Length: 471
Image (cartoon, rainbow, N blue to C red; front, side):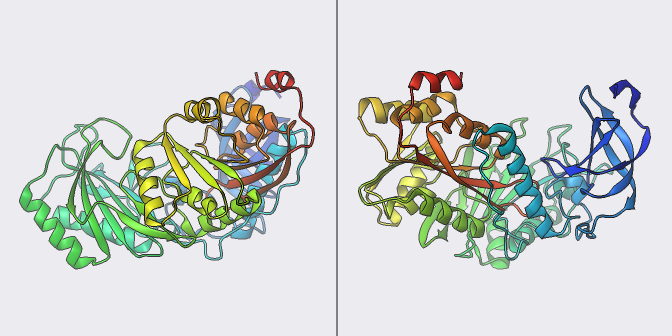
């Protein structure tokens, strides 16, 4: 169909034939694709067109004519606006099937080896699982201070009474702190005028230790000593679980929550958590998986799949604060963890000391540069390589390094199935993809984490053919 025949604000009755990457419904109008938010495969709905592009359009539901069996009443009043968990209208078991289908479709479209994706490993209790809350503070349209979450793709703050995916106590700490701040006539940040003090409240927690960190982000270079003392007294007396309080200074006009400068006003500036029997220090800037319950399961899959022996050298690339490096060190001869964030590597080294792990070395720097140093200068060739990159996936240089040195096994953890499958395509001539196991790290959202296990094929292939493939 010519897209010009579909126009904005027109209404149609359509059948939802599938669900897309973000959980949205997919319909066809004379062959033209329309993405319908909050629609479920198998439904018949009346829609209105919101936006028309060259290859597809976007629409919203006006009326559900035929409801899918998998549809449920949402338990959250704000989920459609905030976008934090966009699948609250779908039965949980069905969301797992949807996520598996997303990964399988990507495999079928991209890989020569049409490996069958495993079932998604779900949570037994998929509620209140996030161990970090980040609440923006601002001024409402009627000029009143407010706290909540940003509406999807905007900076409009939506008040939230009870978020069903964030830790209950962390939410309570943030909201009581906000109330105390306002009751004592302290100002809050206004994005329009860029005036006012309080910008964000961030609370981190250790799931196993029950330790909490409170980070108060202010639009200032300092705050009054008396205010610091009052905050310490109020927070520690109200919430004895709080082990450290930090003032973070951020005067920049930016979407980045934390500024570069911290002041520890209570405690030692970090909390700890226990993951798989290992103790980890968590700082304000540390990346630590937000769902530690599922993280333990994910890492167990990865370590088991790596099949590490006491003679093996392991590279853990994008290692963060060293969580999976320590998991693997138990079985390996030596583990080298690589991470570009200096603060994370400092924490990783401390974590190794805390856990009395001596056969791990943490290196800070760009992955491709550190890889070159390890391989070309230090002549260290790994038996196992572990990847856990950001959403953009691997760079071609890193892939070429793997193809050149050909470790026996590769374990690839990914938060983005699209870039995972793209990168697996570059590796599949040299490696058998033994399994792709999705893990539901973020229940009721459209996101899914995957762990892919690869083994080197018996024959070595011509490197020029491999290099040609990834150009």
